[in-house]
Image 1 (spheres, each protein chain N blue to C red):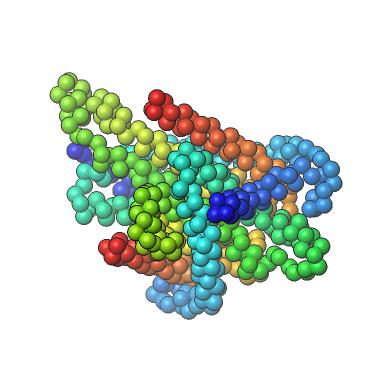
Image 2: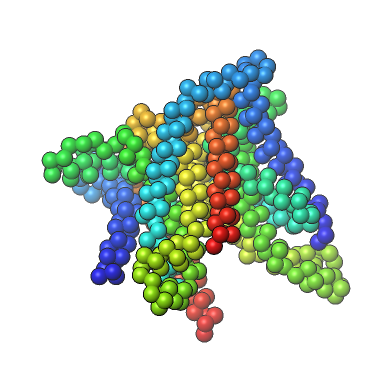
Amino acid sequence: MKNKRTSYPYLLWMLIFTIVPIAMVIYYAFTDESGKFSLSSFVNASDYSEIFLYSLLVALISTAICLVLAYPLSFRISRCSKSKQRMIIMFLMVPMWMNFLLRIYAWVLILQNYGPLDMILSFFGIDITLIGNTSAVVVGMVYEFLPFMILPLHTVMSKIDNSLIEAAQDLGSNSFYVFKKVIFPLSIPGIISGITMVFVPTASTFLVAQYLGGTQFMIGDVIERVFQSDHHTGSAIALVLMVVILGFLVFMNRFGDEEAVGV
Amino acid sequence: MKKLSSKIYFGIIMAFLYLPIIYLIAYSFNNGKTSVWKGFTLKWYKALFSDAQIMGSLYNTLIIAVLASVIATVLGTCAAIGIYNFKGGMRSAILNVSNIPIINPEIVTGVSLMLLFTFAGRLLNFEMGFTTVLLAHIGFCTPYVILNVAPRLRRMDNSIYEAALDLGCSPFKAFYKVVIHELMPGILSGFLISFTYSLDDFVITYFTRGSKFQTLPIQIYTMTHQRINPKANALSALMFVIIFVILILSNIRTNKKDSEVRA
C-alpha cells in the first residue's frame, strides 16, 4: 500500500497529454511561421478583442440571469422533504443529460422565422426576428447552464437548518433581514461555485452562437475558425482565453475564502 | 399566497426546461419538414434506423465510451492510490496538474490536443482518428475517476489492509480484498461519470477526430448545423426516453434502499 509506483503510468500520461499540449499552445502563440520568437500572433489576435469582450458580456448576462432564476427556486426546493427534493432535482437534471447540440437545436426550431413563437407573436401583431441576435444566444446559454447554477445552490441551501431561520424570526427579523443575515451569508459558497460553473463554460463555449446568434460569433467559434488556417494566432487566442479563465477562477476562489472567514 | 406563487414559479421553470424538448419530440412525428403540422408519421424513425452512417457513429460512440471509461477507471484508480502516498506539497501539485483538463475550457483542451496529435502524426506518420479520440477521452475522464476515488482513500483505515496481511493474505490478495473493496463506490461513480462524459463529448472529439472518424455527437452536429433535420428530432426523442427511464429507475432504487435502511 505504501507505494507510489502505481501512479507512475498516470504521471507519464499527464506529461504527454496535459503538460506537453499546453506547452505547445504556448510555443505556437509566441512563435511565427518560421519558428522564431514573435509576438505577431498576439497582434493578429487583438483583431478579435471585441468578440472576446462580447463573449465575456454574454457570459456575464447569462450567469446573472441564471443566478436570479435559480436562487429562489433552489431555496424553495431546499425547504421540501428529502425524498421530494431528490425527485425535483432529478426532474431538473433530465434535460441536462440530453446532448447539448440537440438542446440548442430545439431552440433553433422554436425561435426560427415562422416557428411556433414567431407565429404566436405575429398573431398578436408583434413582428420581431427572434433568432440571430444576442438575446437568442443568451436564452440558449441560460437553457444550457441553468441546472449548473441550481445544483450547487441547492446543495448548500439544503444544509441550512430551518431552526436558524425560525430563530431569526423569533428574534424579530422580517423576511428581508432573515434573508440578509441568515440565508444569504450561508449560501455564498453555493453562489460562488454556481457562478463559476456557469460563467466558465458560457464564456468559452462554441457553436451556441453559430446556431442561435446569426453572424455574431463568440470567442470559441473564433478559435475554431482561426485554427483551421493559422495555428499561431489560434494558439494566442486560446492562451489568452485560458489565462483569463484561470484568473477568474483564482479570483472567485480568493473571494470565496475571504467571505468564509468574514462570516 | 406564498405557496401558490412559488408553485407557479416552479411550473414556469419546469416548462422552460421541458417545453423545448417536448416540442422537439412532438415534431419527430410530423409528416413534413417545416413547423407546419402535416399529420402523424413514423418515417423519420425509419430513416434514422436505416441510416448506416448514424448507426455506425452510434457504434463508434459506444466503443469509445466503453474503452475510455474502463481504461480511465483502471488508470485513475491506480494513480489515486499512488498519489495518496506522496507527501503534502508534491501531492497537491500532482492533483493540480491532474485537474487541468477539468478546469481548462474544453475548447483549449481540444485545440492543444490537436496540436499534439498533428505534430506527433507528422513525426510518426499517422492520422487522427479512432486512436486519438480514444486517447483524448481517456485524458479528460481520468481526472474525474481520481476525484471520486481520492476521498474514499483518505477515509480508508490502513490497519485493515495490515490486518489482512497479518492474517496471511498475500499483498495482492489483501489489496484486492480490502483496498479495492473499500474504494468500490468511488471507482464505480468515477466509471459512470467517465462513461456518460465520453458518450456526450462533442468539443474535444471535434478537434481530435481527424476528417473521417464519426461519433454520435459529431453526427448530430452535421445533421443540425445550419439546417432543420427531422431525423435529429427522432434521435432526440429516443435519447430522451432512454435517459428518462434510466433516471427514474435509479431514483426508485435509491428510494427503496432508503426505506429499507429506515425499516
